[in-house]
Length: 108
Ligand code: FES
Image (tube, rainbow, N blue to C red; front, side, top):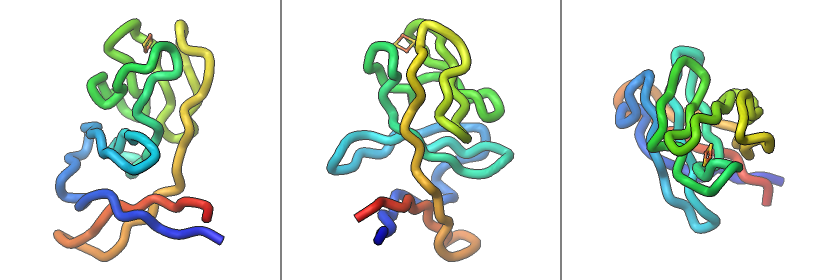
């Protein structure tokens, strides 16, 4: 069984940007790419800094601290020094137009 957690309005995350959202279990990074919206854990797997403060290039999220890149579509670590993947979350867009909301699916 799973449930949906609403994060924020789609309109509040421009295409090409990434933003942090805090949840009970930790922070997630919401990346709005030309390929769609992807949500991953916000902490870099190399040294626990916030990835939402890094740069989003297409579907690659680059850590500002030491430059590791992650594929936000899969969570895979693409370049060192990070080697471990990011946790990813299934994304649902609820509603349409200005009222569309980004939600993630959590296993109950
Ligand atoms: S803390 Fe992210 S690459 Fe080192």
